[in-house]
Length: 72
Image 1 (cartoon, helix red, strand yellow):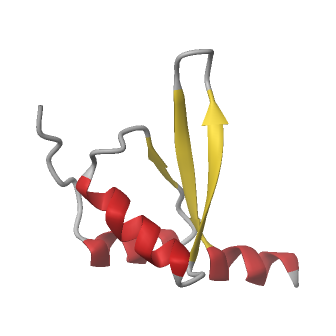
Image 2 (cartoon, helix red, strand yellow):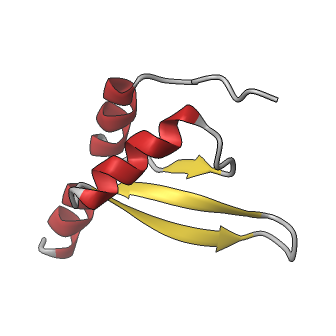
C-alpha cells in the first residue's frame, strides 16, 4: 500500500513554525524523509508517543519555536 503525500515540505515547515505539532504514525509517509532531514539540520525535534503496546507515533515540533518559548 502506497502512502500519499498530505502536504508539501513548505506547508509542513510553515505549520511547524506557526507552533503546530505534526503527528506521524507511518514510516512510509513521504513527509517522514523531509522531517528526518530537518531534524538532522537541528530545525525540528521529535518525541515518541506510545498510545498502547501496539500503537505509537512521532510528535514533531519546530526546534526554533521550542527554544523561543523556553527563553521567554
